[in-house]
Amino acid sequence: MMALVTVSTLYQTINIALLVLVSKGWRIVRPSLDHNDAMNVLMIVGAVYLSFSTYYVSFGVEKMQALLGFSINVLYLLVCLIVTKNAHGILSGLRQYLLIIGPNHQLTEAI
Image (cartoon, rainbow, N blue to C red; front, side, top):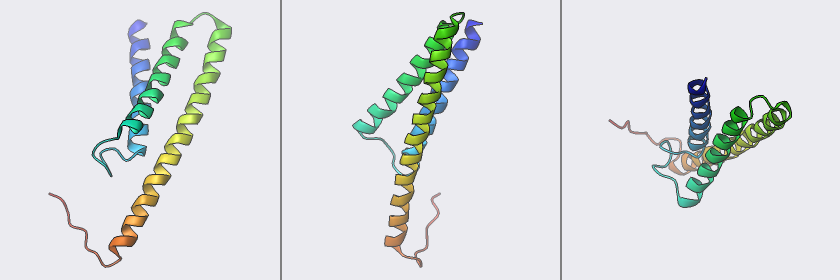
């Protein structure tokens, strides 16, 4: 049972972390994150890990699990809003870049 809890907690944490990192353009548009972005991702990952760890530890306490289930749903909503905002910012930056280079520019393929 503990292995399942550990794997589930780590899966949720890594899944959210990668989603937030990709929405910030990490390794797609920019090679690294600045300090503030890295700290924001770290805070989100910490909140997800803490929420799921607490949820699984409170197994058997129905009211606590209901409260934590609600807080996890709110956390997912916040992550969805953050990812949408980040992706919109990255897409608008890419649109500006495409306007700068012009419609006749040939993109070279990286090998």
